[in-house]
Length: 227
Image (tube, rainbow, N blue to C red; front, side):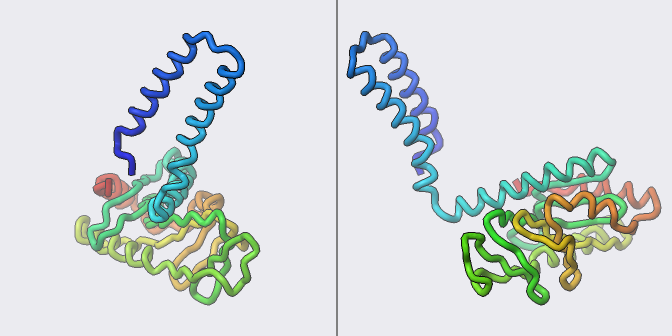
């Protein structure tokens, strides 16, 4: 909202003024006033962006934090020899794929950062309810159809490129109050972020042949990034 160079201008001005104030022989109460000025300026710098940030940017940032949490968990799989690609460009629509993971099987992960919400199973969907005393009937339903479509198209794209079929399992990774352990909802796995790696390690093996596992890993590694 202020322009890309505003941060540079602010800190340059702040440093010049602070340096100039340090050279002044300020007597009480002027020293207190100058200190309050710099303290208020720094506080404003920290708070104004939060106050003026449009809601869609705040929502995007919250989602990005969730993806970073998932990426940190997936490093354990990478150290174990799995192939992980983040923020993959989706060729079948205007969206991206948060994480594509290849190991003994192939997975497409979609991260939902719902740290301020309670997540419960309701039929074939998830009900998301705010934690701050909201009624159970409030909130909204999350069906995860997006990641299921992404997994379908990843399977189609892989078969077209490599010449053999591999099922891509859709996984919804939840960061929030979600208890009860990993759950399957109509072909969609729902897993809390803290349980994700152990759950993936405990899954079965689709890619039994080493050459196919290597080919799938190389294919995932070559997927184009969305950014």
